[in-house]
Amino acid sequence: MSRQQDDHQFGDRRIVKWLNQEREWKYPKNVPYHPRSDSHGGAQSRYFVDDLIHESDVIAEAAREGDLVYAEDYDVGDPRGLGWNVDLVMGPPAGDVQAPLEGGMAVGPPSEVWLACDAKSIITEHQKARRNRQRDINSFADIMHSHHEQAITCGILLLNIADRFDSPTRDADDITDHPNIDRIVGEIVDLFDSIDRSEGEMSANLDGAGLVVVDHTNLIDDIGDTDLVTREPAPQPGERVHYRTFVSEMADLLEQRFL
Image 1 (cartoon, helix red, strand yellow):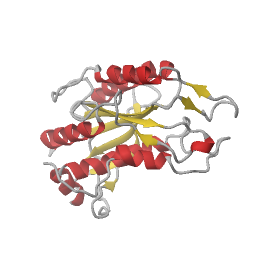
Image 2 (spheres, one colour):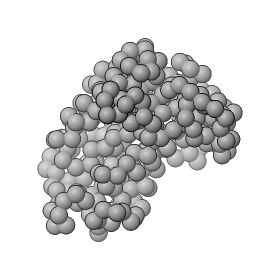
Image 3 (cartoon, one colour):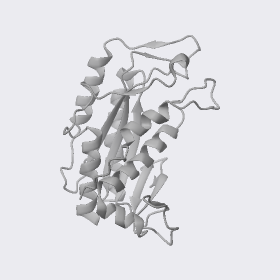
Image 4 (cartoon, helix red, strand yellow):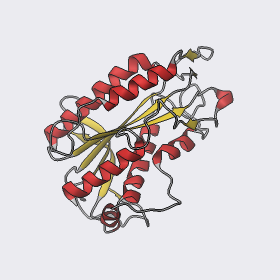
């Protein structure tokens, strides 16, 4: 059941605010996003939890009663072998949990994994990264289901459409140009839309993927100018890889399968 709250801000817009904040990194460049940091994935995962709570009265009640908890950076199996370090897992608590803040969900290890989400990004070097991220999400779903057969597996992809990017891993004057970026982003959207889905059944396939397209140059002079992109080639409302459609579908699936 969907809950309508006009003041709720979904994770696709909240991650833009996150990117627009200046931060001090331990890396050479003072920039909001760094490919060697998992901070953006953690932020995106926490926003997803809030979105699920907003989307479903049933999930909100389970969170409020302490019957549903989440954990970040959760090891499933042995990550050095047939395992995965998952950005976000959700399920019933393994033990006593502290009551969550009003409207939130308690943090703690689940006794079993009901939902697992991997948060990835393609910010620069799209041609190389696209296939890597596709393989990541397929491997993630397969490994998760080998350990937790009933678990809902999903992914969130932060996808950059800026035509210039100042990569923190490159020299200070080495700015990456992305010619034909609209075409490339459109191809990546289609690629992730084409990944085999479980279609609500229990299978080894992915259950859902949500894409968030941003215009994020990462140029020092442009920090604070990141925008959420809603025009094509970004996914459009109603398409299954549109972030808010994805949230709604994952909330419905979590309700139906476990709650």
